[in-house]
Amino acid sequence: MNTYGRFPIAIAKGEGCRLWDTTGKEYLDFVAGIATCTLGHGHPALAKTIAEQIHQLHHVSNLYYVPEQGELAKWIVEHSCADRVFFCNSGAEANEAAIKLVRKYAHTVLDFLEQPVILTAHASFHGRTLATLTATGQPKYQKHFDPLMPGFAYVPYNDIGAIQNAVTDLDEGNRRVAAIMLEPLQGEGGVRPGEVEYFQQLRQICDQNDILLVFDEVQVGVGRTGKLWGYENLGVEPDIFTSAKGLAGGVPIGAMMCKKFCDVFEPGNHASTFGGNPLVCAAGLTVLKTIEQDHLLENVCERGEQLRSRLKELATKYSPLFTDVRGWGLINGMEISADSDITSIEIVNAALTEGLLLAPAGPKVLRFVPPLIVSESEVEKAMILLDKAIAKVKG
Image (tube, rainbow, N blue to C red):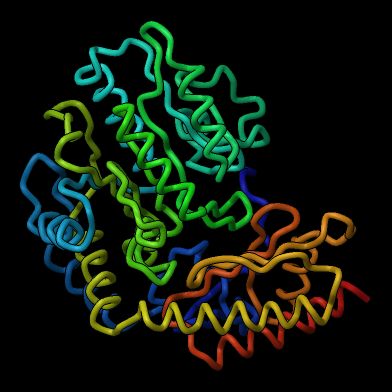
């Protein structure tokens, strides 16, 4: 089906932070499967784990206890604020699980609330299923897919006054705000980091009003920001959070984590045929242990600083074309001036020609999400290639 607007290349193989297309041309990969290939391509530890696990046991369903699933859940709980983990296959599925958990909690714990509302942010992105599409605060993704799911309302990101007003306005009779669902850093919405003061006030509002705080960490979790979890950058803990993309380094997995007090699911409430199978969980555990053992969070912080510094140099060189460079760790955005006719996709295409893979985050933002193993020399090479691409587009 014609569901993807693809770039005009076909990738044949990869190693580390490099990819080669079917013609043999080499690319430096600063997309990482859209913030997914945590350890790059063909990482020895991940390849070894997958090969061994596929020979041993790859799938049995959740009719039986899966030891690898238990090990991965234990690691996550020991290295996060979560007490419970549910495994699925993607970020959208993880967010669906979070939405269902919120609704059951609202119906069974919050005075049997009949019409729970989940607040999400404008410019957010939570997935493409009907519920997560509705949660996504971007009308362009929702067009032609109505009627959308009820029970969602939207507020501006990083605006605490808007949250306070929405909580007051929506609380009426059997209808009230049951949860606030946000990304710690908005990825698809333009790589916009959350503000610490905003999220800390948000946590207070949730505590004072028995509102669940839900973080969508599908893109920012698993070390991408320089912290293992995105919420660690904000000094608050969510009640529920989700992960996917980088969790198994490119093997399809999703996870919804929560604290014990809001774990209201019972057998039969939610399930997944493939979720948490031995293969993906073994891969996930290897990714997380490699991040820890190889001190990759330090590399993410160092390379992120280097990347932002060089991007700011380019922004100065091509002033006034670029208006902002922002991000955490190795998820960064470079914003093109609204006054310029140049779009992000034009620069992405020019970079592709130069041998650098980038992704847009909207029509005016370039997104940089290389594998967490990216080296100092690779960041420098990427900036040289980007410089050439910008010069070509700018003419």
